Length: 440
Image: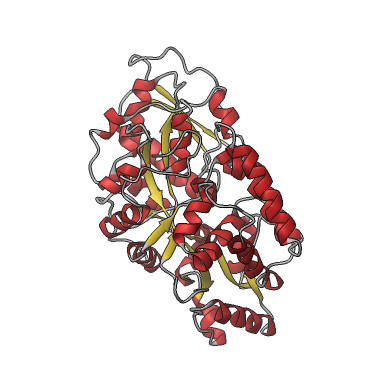
């Protein structure tokens, strides 16, 4: 069982993430969107209780495509529940992620978006979320494994899963066909392909980290491919030393990729880098499947391959696939009506509403309509369902205070000056020791 303040650990009796997402992928598909809801609370929505049918909803789905999907679900809720009204407060998801503690301790919205697993458990432990076990009692279509990822360390449910999405290396099929590129299986083949792309006049790898989180996915994959899933999970949970040679090897390996990255990556958003891939200015990009939101009608030309193998003994069996969804604030002004909204958001109808606008993600409910899944969605579901191990993401598998105050800056420092790996790892370890010594 996890100790207080260490959301990077889970009960040994809970189903693994592999069983969580594999069950979902087999039953339906998998969805994702780096959803970190950035909601600015508008203040009290009126007296609580069942008499008030107004719910405030904090949403970080500010980009056009996901905003449309969420808006459709909210509209359908209001249409099918006469008298209920949802006031949506939409804020850039990056701002919300960085200010989540202040938001939850201030005047949060009744319902807001966040993540499954450790980060949900962390805020539940701190008493910032409300128990929605009664809502879960009426749910159908979610596996026991999905339920486990929605459950706090106290055995109560706090999270309504909505979708999830795999991370991989994405590319345009037409670009690979034009140049005769082959899918790389190993890291050496990956580097060789990047060199060839440079010769062909392409920037090999789209990359951005202005927002602070995209680089985490590359670290996660290189660590899992180099040291294995178990070590990665333990490192994220705070149980390993960041000065371990195994960690330094991750940065040393990553450094080999830097000459092939998009120039000015620290000043680019993920949307800008995805657009460069869409415009055929770059050849590849490691990100979540949501990057297809930037492709418009070109999304049919988008494909991916699993992150390349580094150690043959480890292979490519681990996949990064975060789950996103909704939570009920402990300070909800109108919990009864908020639970009514959460009940709807846990239905296949609500997921289908979202997927109708955003075909780059996968539904988590087994009853979601997958008949219209694109080739990309089908491939994403297969990648997850065949994975032996599934991680969430660095900022979901670790304490949020550690990631936000230490790792964002540390990874950007590395990208800006990759030569001093020893100094970087020493700095991370010193700060980690101090943070994990606190209750969290």
